[in-house]
Each structure stands twice: as structure tokens, then as C-alpha cells.
Image (cartoon, rainbow, N blue to C red; front, side, top):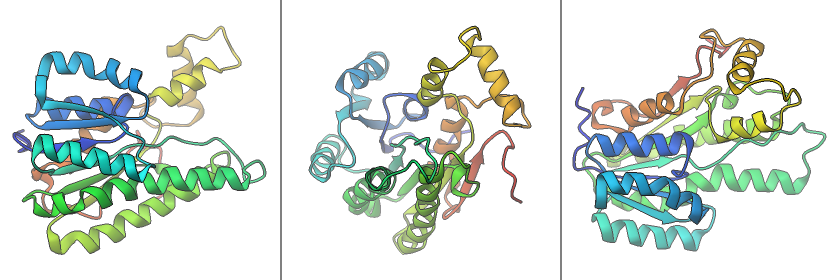
Length: 263
């Protein structure tokens, strides 16, 4: 299927690994120009190098912490200077915090609020004028199933993810008159850097990575019996971002292997 992405300009935050990097790759393969940003210059360079070898100037890597307003403003100037506009913004930056209410102090709550909300707010604010000028303006927020289905060991993250989902719906209504769509995907367990780090910190050192993932899927009662792949989540992001989904806004698409418990 032709998603209509040829010649479109996109920015993917948190684009140096996992779902973000997979999204960048799919957008490039479909003919878009793509800027990707990440906080760590070395990781960003390592991720970008093979893609630049293949796609050349269609890829623009930028070191940026999306929680930093000045850094986001500088990124906006670089992207608009290079591309002349922006059609697609993928707000992907952020990771989960494992904590209960009892062991989450005020500083942790503030850090999580800053990461979850301002990683969406600041890029959206910076690039909204460009998206409004596009004939296919689209924002996709990579969110978590925790927004609707909290877990006891993810209290802080789940609460903030729910707030982000409310923000997505609010923005979709506010931006609709300017023909800028806003959607989200809700992730279940998708194999990423976070899960790799948890594997490395596992108690049972005898388990292989495949054994550990299979046990995790079984323990979590995932109906499809496995963790998702970053490319599977990225495919959902790219579809929602594309002109093919032109009549979809304010929606949330589960990418969870069927693990949700709500109707």
C-alpha cells in the first residue's frame, strides 16, 4: 500500500533506538525526509550512520533533549532550514519508571511529569505553525497501555501516561480546524532498550534472552504469546502519521498483543 509519504517531512523524537529508530527507517523507506533526535550524541551517531549511508541527506540527525526549551527551539530552526517545513511529528521520547506510590518521592514525580508531558508539549508547540501550514499535518504520540490499564509497580508512570492520553484527545479537538491530526498508539510489552536492560538485571542468570522473553510473555498472559517487535509498533505509528489515515484523529491504537483487559 502506498501511504502517501513520498516527499513528506517528518521529525521523530527519541529516534536513536527501539521504536523511534524503527519508525525513522520505515518513513525513509516510504520516501519521506526525516529528522531524528536523541539526547546521547554517540548513540545518535551510531544509529544514524547506516541510514545516512543508504538515504543520504534525506536523514537529519540532531542532538536534542526535548525537555529543554532552548534545545527544542534550536532543533526547530535546523529542521525548518533543512526541510523547509514539517508534515509529521512523532513524539516518542520517554521511558517507564518502575516504582510504587510508597517509593516515589516528590522529585521523582516532578521528573516523570517533566519527561512525559514536556516531551510532547515542547516539540508540539515548536512545530505546530509548520504543521498548520502543511496539507497533511499529523502528530503521533507513542504512549503506553498503562494510560488505561495501570500496574501496581508503575504507579507514577501510569498516572502520567493517563494524563498524556487526555492531552492527545484535547489537542486533536483543538487542532482539527487547522487540519492537524493528533493520534496515539498504546504500547503493551514491546521489545526495546528498556526490556534489554531489565533482562540484563534479571535474577536468573541461566536464562537466555529468548527464554526470558517467553517466560515474561507467559507471566503477563499476553494472548499472542510473545513480546512485540519495534517494527510492529513503528508500522502503527507510520500508518497513523500518513495521509492514508486522513480521517483519523483523536484515536488510540493498541499495539499490545491482546493484553488489554478493557473493552
